[in-house]
Image 1: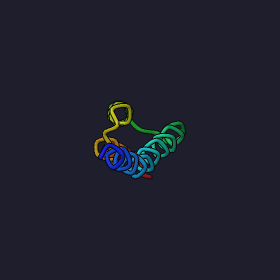
Image 2: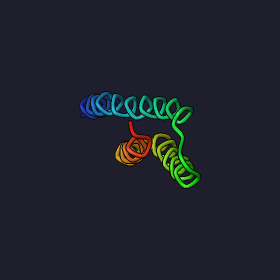
Image 3: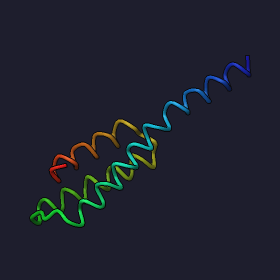
Image 4: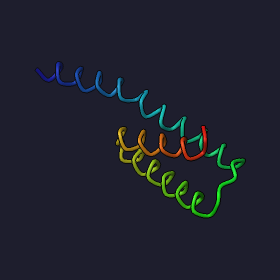
Length: 79
C-alpha cells in the first residue's frame, strides 16, 4: 500500500513539474519583454503587480494562479 502511494505521489509530481516549468519560462520571457516594452505609469504598475502575483503563485506552487497572472501579463505586454 505504501509503495502504491509513493508511486502515485511521484507520478503526480512529474506531471505537475512541466507546468511550473512553463510558468517559470513565461516569467523569464516576460521579464525580458518588460525591458523593451514601453508602458505608461499605470501599465507599469499593473505589470509589476501581475509579475509579483506570478512569482508568489510559483513559489506557492499554485499553477492556476501563476498561469492566470502570466497570461494576463503577456496580454498587457502584447506578447
